Length: 369
Image 1 (cartoon, one colour):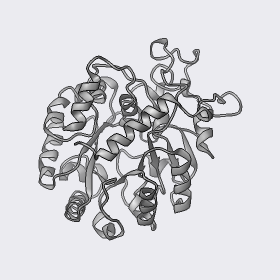
Image 2: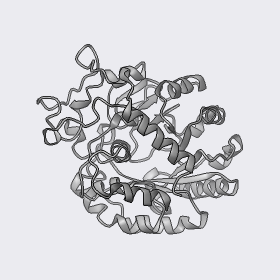
Image 3: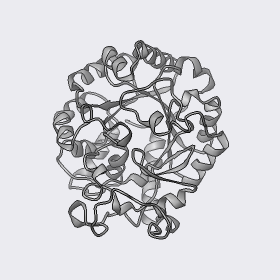
Image 4: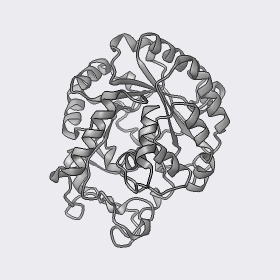
């Protein structure tokens, strides 16, 4: 199976339960009552973007994956990353384990993506991960891989724990993107050590305008020797902190870049659902479900999404209720116009929004591979 049975069954049960009985305290609309604001909003009635239809789950909001950022400090200055720029005034701050656990409990999402910054710089990352696993959550520890080998003894292999190493190409390309020589080899050594120790390991790759998809295929071929547990792919999105059109893509660019993605999906264990890949190819439309991947960091709950910051909220309930969700998305906010990022649209695919005949069978076949 593509994912552990416990993860597949648990996520399916969680989605069904919340679709049938979404928590009412997360469905209020307080955006106009001293709540969040969207200074870039196109002036039109709520819900009139994206063909005029209201979001099909605007009153059934619930989280799927918590993007937990315990710190924003990092040992690299990657070209496409805006975190160390956006949070330069708090880059030396970090969340305590207790603060992280409170966010995990408050949100209740079944999957926690521990990211940053570089999470392996956090002094208590081992204890933090163990405590989150003890709550029955699945973890993706997102890292650039440099410190994996060094800090591996602080973790124990677990069926719900994945080490997710970022690789944007083969050695020359990856080292260019992260702006430091030798990082690719350090990441590979981390992968090698983690797999030898019995850990589940995946990779995460950002596709830029200049990315050669043949090189991505070659990267996956090279990684076959380690018998990895999956590969994530997402097109680069030019959000405000790093908005450089020389490396970021329009929707048309993304569709052209991913037009032959089926060949990769048939050969390698991609973690992207068939529905999301169809979206990247331009074969179907999906609305953004940013609330399904909420972000928590040293400033609080980040709204509206992992990539755009208009506000930070003290509580998860405030994020859900005070964010003007229908002011965002394609046709509502120019900053969203070209975004096709995994964190915004893969939840829509998982939730079955805009489902088409045959989707259930395609998804089941994909999960069982």
